Length: 216
Image 1: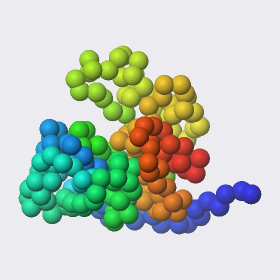
Image 2: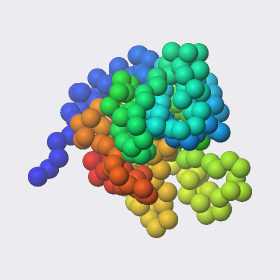
Image 3: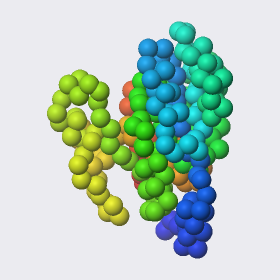
Image 4: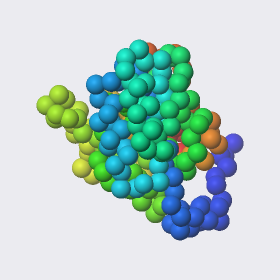
C-alpha cells in the first residue's frame, strides 16, 4: 500500500510559517555521570545564535553533581528545563525529552558534546528552505587525534547530498548513525511515532536510524 504523503499545500504553508516566524528548536540532552563536561555542553547550547530554543535536560538518575549543575543553569536561563527520572538508560531519557518537547524541530545532544555557535541557525535554515523530515549533519572529534582518519571522514564528510537516495552515507559498513548528528521535524516524529528503543546497552542510535529513515 502506498504511503500517504503530506499534501503540497500543507507543506507550502508550513514553509511560509517557518520563514515568517521564529521557530523553536527543542534540544534534548540525556544526562548521566556528566559532571566533567556538562557545563561546556550547556554553554554551547545557550550561546547559539538561533535563540528560540528549549534545552530539555533529562537527568537520568545521575549519582554525581550533574543535578546541581543543571539546577544552576536552569536558574540562569529560562530556556533550560530539567526533568528528573530514575536511571532507565539513554534511550528512555531521550524519549522522555521528546515527550516534553514543544519545538518544531528536535535535536539530540549528548552531555559531553558541544555545538558550534551557528549550528542551530544552520539547522533552522535547512528546515526552512528544504523542508526535510530528517536531517543528518557532520560532527568532529575534539581533539581530532582521538579518532582514526577514516572515522573523521565519515563523521564530517565534505560533500553534501540533497534530494537523492545515498545509502552509503547512512548504512554502509562502519557508518556512524549517531543521534547527536540528527535533527527531526517534530511533526514527523509524532506522526510516525519515532522513539528510541528502551533497554539497549549498545547500538541504540543505529536502531533509531532504522526507525527514522524508512519513513522520512
